[in-house]
Each structure stands twice: as C-alpha cells, then as structure tokens.
Image 1 (spheres, rainbow, N blue to C red):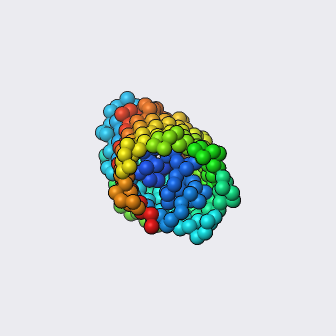
Image 2: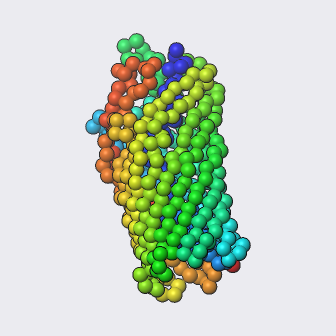
Length: 413
C-alpha cells in the first residue's frame, strides 16, 4: 500500500500536468505579429500551417525557417499564502516550411512545427508540490501536404500530421510519515516518456474578390499512448521504485476559419477564429508500474480563440505589423492543476518584415501575453490518500505574463 501511495502521487503529478490549455499557435514570425490572421491568404510556404490550400498561391519553390522563444511566469498564492514566482525560463518552438509547385494546379508542401507544449517550474517543497514541481512537454508535427486549384477562385488541400510527443516531469509525492502528522513530501520522482501519433488536416480557400480571400481548415484528433520510465529514490518508509508507466491522451481536433482583405496595395488586414475540441481531454487513463491503473478527471471544455492583424508596407523593403488575440482558457474551475497559470489570455502582437533582396526576406516579431487573474480549486482526487493529508486548496494567479520573441527567414527560388 505504501508503494502504491507513492506511485499514485508521483505519476498523477505528471499526467495532470497536461491539464490546462496547452496549444501553441506560434507558427511563423509574420503570423505571430498578425495574430495568426493568415488563413485566407498567406502567400508563401508558411501556408503549410495556416491553410495548406493557400499553397496554390505560390508559383516558385519557397522555403521558410524560424523559431519562437517563449518565457512564461506568474505570481501565485495557495490558500492566501504568497508563493515564490513561477518562472520556467525560455522555451523554443522551431518551424520549417517548404512549398514546391509541380504544375499550374498542383502544389506539394512540407511543414515542421509545434502544435502543443508547455513548461512550468516551482521551488521544491512549495505548498502544492504534491501536484507538480516541474513539467516540460514538447510536441512536434511533421506535416506533408498536397494542394489543388480547382478553379481560379477555389483551392483545396489534404495533409498528414505525424505527431511526436515528449514529456518529462519532476514531482515530490507524499509518503507515509509519523502517526499524528500524516504523509510528508518525498525526494523528487522522475518520469520521462514519448510517443508517435497520426492525424490529418483538410483545408479549402476561396478567392471571393480580387482583394478578399477566405479559408477554412479542419485538423483531426491525434491519439497518443505515451510510454516511459518512472524512477523515485528510496525514502525512510519505502524502497526505491522504478518501472514502466504509460498514459493515454487524445489531442483535440480544431476548426480554423479566417478572412484576409487587401485594403490597398500597401495595406492588408485579416481576422481568424479557432474552435478547439478541448473536451476530448476530459480524463487521462494511465497504468502504474505493477499494472495498477488510475483515471484522472480533467473535464476540459471546448474553447474559442479570436485573432486579428494588420500589415502595412512603409517602403518597398520594410513592412510593419500589429495584431491582437483573445484566447479563452478551457480548464475547469474545480479541477485545476498547477501546470500553467489559468485564465483567459489577451495577446498583443507586433513585428517587422525586411525584404533583403528580390528573393530573400527576414521577419522579426514580439508578442506580450497577459492572463486574467484566476482562481482554481486544486483538489486531492487520489482515493488512497485521506483528504486531510492532501486537502483541497485554492490556487490564485495574478501578474501572469509571457514574452514571445520570434524570427524567421524565407527564400523564393
């Protein structure tokens, strides 16, 4: 029983770290700066992400490579007691795209990007260390696409999404303690695992007028059966524990729609709406070493993300960009986790584009995320532990911010 108690807390700490909205939308520096509003018209190889049907707008072989650096942090309290600031450092989201026209109507494309990811780090022994102390999730999508121009005003696309997911977690599970004091925090446990999954996307693009373009993209669910190794050092009441652990997680489907308008030859605007089926992350089933199973309820709700952006050509070689995004938090108020600060997000975006030569372009972007103040109930759902030893706590977050710095370079052959 003591071993099962230890494993329950350690492994649940890892798996519930998936429990907030962990989508990534930083697909290119230009896209970041315009609030992701490039669904109707992209014009280059980054269409592999925004709307692969837009690849039919490219007439030459085009390549793009870039990255986004992300730094989240926040102040937080547990039961009105101030905790040390959560600051996870900087994380990197790399991107690569290729567009290859094979005829006037057919275009092949390839995209490498991250659709999901997160990182949190708290001090050892903090008030909710039994929930999580440090978690990193990395996801990469390999995305071959094919696009076809049916008419001069209508294009369609289809693509595979090969998803590679990695997670790593350090936690401080509870272990049995003195009779009158109950369990105490153990040394850090460590769990790391990975998995490959497969999904698809389909898209369409309409040229409504010479200056107005619209598009829709559907991305399917992707099922992951994550397998990894679990290790925890020996404690005063339990020997060292190690073995295999696994978890089943379904990444959500989504529908993205957007419109772009060339107001003048120098000025462009766009808007986009993303609906994500976060309700697929309603629970996570996992198997502990020794064959013990557990279901962690999360009860995510479906959520929308709204984005808009504008782009202006100051000169033949310099563009300026601005955007705004409102991103709704899908997490459940009474089933919160400490994976990421909860709360709806307001994102202010900006960037510059430089035309270095006739075929070479360089983009930079800077975004600022401000999360609304939030309060979540962090409850003990582990049936093997008396609630008095891991009571329900109120977790309040404020001053929750993130900085995003991006850069990318593209070349048309």
